[in-house]
Image (cartoon, rainbow, N blue to C red; front, side):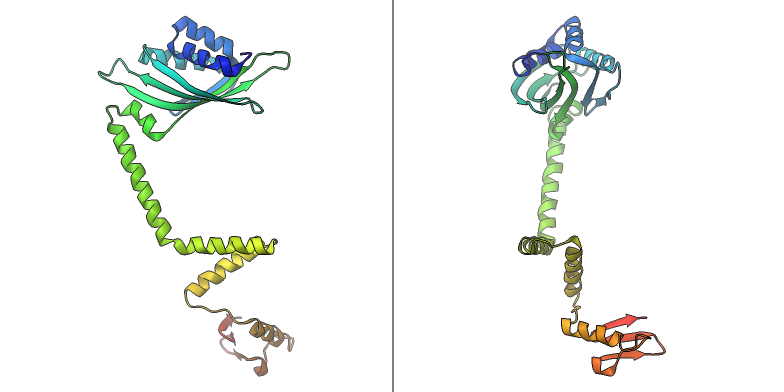
Amino acid sequence: MENPVQEVAGVVHKLTQGSPSEQEETINTYFTPNASFTHPFCRTGSFEGSRTLIHAIYRWYKILSPEIKLNVNSVAYDEPRMLIYLNITQLFSIWLIPFHHANVTLTTELQLVRPPSSRKYYIQSQNDLYQNDQLIRFLMPWGVGNLLVHIWQYSSTLMCVWGAFLLAPMTRLQQNLSEKRAENGSFSAEDEIRDLVSSAMEGVGYKQPSSGSSKRRSNSAGVNGNGSGSADAGASASGNGGVQQFGNMQVVS
C-alpha cells in the first residue's frame, strides 16, 4: 500500500468478501511472508512462512460463512508507529447452524512495515480485538450469550461498588500519602511503608511512643556495654525473662 489510510478498507473487503483466488492474491500482495495473525480463537505467531497459516485461516473463514456483510466504519493511522486501527462491523453467518447470525463490532489493529528500498507498506501483523459481549455472539447466538455477559458485567460493577465502599479507608490513606509526596517531594517508598504500618497499628489501638521517649530509649541502651537501661530513662528490664519494657513497648531480647 502506498497510501494505507486510503487503501486499507479495500484490502479488508477483498480479504473477507472476495473470491477465494482474490483472497489468496490479497494476502500474498499485502502481508509479509512472516506476518502474524491474532484472534481470540486462533493465533499464528511470526516465523518465516507463517503467512501460509493466514491463508488457511481466511479460507476456513470463507467456508464457514460464504456470504459476509462487512463495513469499515472508521480508520485511524498512528503514522510514527505505523499502526492502523479499523472499527469494523460484520454480519457473520455459519451456514451449518440454522438461523445463525452474529452481528459483531470489532477493532482490528494492523502493524505495518516499509522496507527501506520501497515506497509501499506491508502488513506485519493483524490483531482482531473484540469486547466480551461481541465475541460471545459467535458461540451463543440469538442474544443468549449477550444476556449472560451483561449479567456478569453488571454483577462485577456491583462488586466494585461494594468493594469501594467497604475499603474507603484505604482510599483516604492513599490520598494522604499522595499529598505527603507532593509536599515533601522526596517522600520515599520506605517512608510510605512506615506510614502504612503506622496507620495499621493505630487502627488496632496501638500508639507509638513519642519522639522524646524514643530518644530516652536510645540513651538508656547506650549506658553500659551490655545494653541494659537505667531507671531514670523510664525503662525496666526483667533479667530472667529477657523482656524489656520501654514506655508502651515491650522488646524481647
